[in-house]
Length: 253
Image (cartoon, rainbow, N blue to C red; front, top):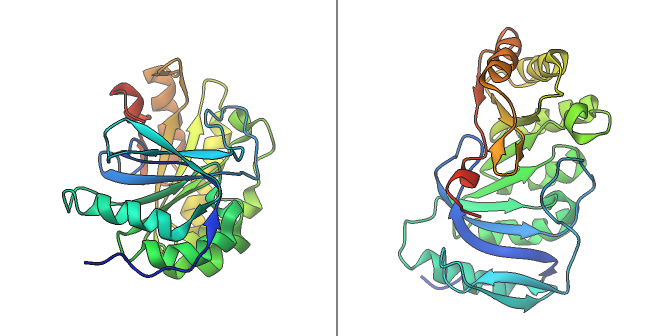
């Protein structure tokens, strides 16, 4: 199958690679990760550089671990040629394309052009901080999965934007969607309770994932702390899971 025809739209990228999804409901699935530059937040626990760079790094072969540099901005036709070749060697390996960041919706105008083309190759999976509902709405027809964060104040260092998260989830829940909240030793039960109430009230069909914060390669909460947080959330929303960053345990990107 030939690569889809594209418009000449350029984007600020950080990296393109193939790996195993280590978070959320698609944990264990092989994805093509497309990391976009830029973010509208600056969370205290964030471990991912997101500032735009002169070059982005691209795996020479999917999962090979060897990278080349491409100058930014990257043209859509260049990106499609690479992903199209990856989808053919061998076909069926990749579940979907993960659009991650930073915050991908910071480049929403770009995604409006890119998503319809990318979706011809593989299903699309948006990883987002859940704070830009106006940017999300026009993109919904071109998204298959949405992994939405709730940014808890105890970890992010700023007040949780509950009203914005509520509006975002109302839109995201029209697709296959789940909600993730990173939790730490400092996370109070009341905060997790409020997150569970939000999901239960807006999208009761969606899973709430509590993800223990990872520092120095390991989760920082005790089993007792995790069970207490899960119990507090489950009293208001029964669809609660504890899923750590599993890719950290097996040394994957």
